[in-house]
Image (tube, rainbow, N blue to C red):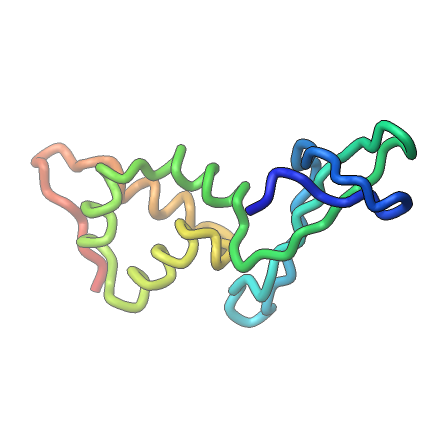
Amino acid sequence: MSDSVQCPKCSESVPLGKMVAEMEELRVHDHKVNFVVRRFSCACPKCGPFFYDRVGHHGTISVVEMSKLFPKAKRKGIKNALSEAERELFRLTVEGKREPKEGEIERWLTLRSPSKRGEVYRES
């Protein structure tokens, strides 16, 4: 990824600014991310401020949020407690390639916490 972009008016190379927005297009039936548009704020010294958009395949904001909720050290225990189909949904969600459905994060958070006996709850 380049750290500079061209001004749309004068074509001068300017530094890539800070990301100010991220828009995702989701498939309704399975919540998978089709693509993501990241909007950056840039400023040309001659022409002034402008926005620059980049297209990606996963949500970077989602990845950061999921990493905070599910640190790598805890993910294995959660995956072991899930069925194979649920494990794939969890993986895609943590990678930012799928948005979680209502209630999924709360359920996964309960699996993250070990039970009193030190056992992990396994779904059937």
